[in-house]
Amino acid sequence: MRQTRPLPDTHPEFSIIECPEFCEYRVENWRLAQNGSGRVIRGATAWSWLDPCIPVLLSFVWMRNRDSLAASLSIALALALFVWSRCNQVLHESVLVFPTVGIQLETHRGHPSMEPFVVSRRFIHASSLEDFVMHEGFRRWNVRYYLAAIKRSNHGVISIQVAFENILPYFPVLREVYLGVQEAMFPRPNLEETG
Image (tube, rainbow, N blue to C red; front, side):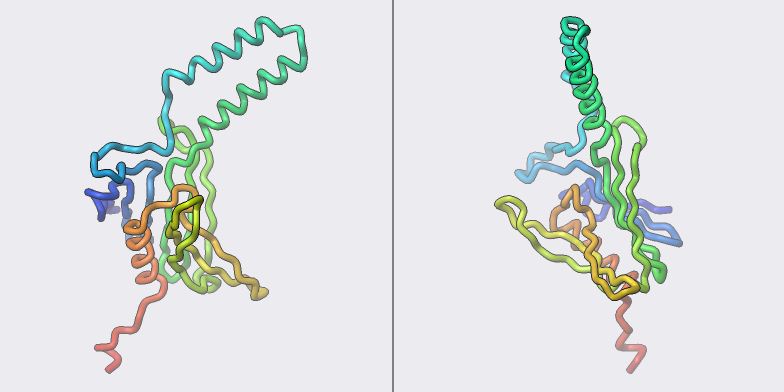
């Protein structure tokens, strides 16, 4: 297994993990600031000083209203939502390429200081993979590029699966992934060998 960072100066959050059986294109949920300062902008945040304040504040509110069932349920719901929001952050997203078998789109969620709690996987078999495209779309006031796998079901229904749909990496990262997937899944015939 070999891990490389093909864009270390501009996009160090992007890495390629190569194994004999597959290749993983991984984008972690952080990036460098676009102004060239080298400052890291985190998408998933670890513990901060504010995190212990919320349960303490909720315990004070509970002490004053512990006789009320509605207040107790509201506090329990608020605490559960707080824990869920801290432990449901996107840590990284990946595109795994298994040549001649298919591709797998993964999203890893959890808390940054722990192992992922939830991993969602969508596998697209090579026989149902029509194409892997790079396209552009609008997000708020920005034009963003994205990668999508076009899949045809057994019944002929076409669906689109978006890669890196939560992190939305920048164009240079998407270009590297796009070229790697195209090379592995849709090899072009060598013109020198055929002629």
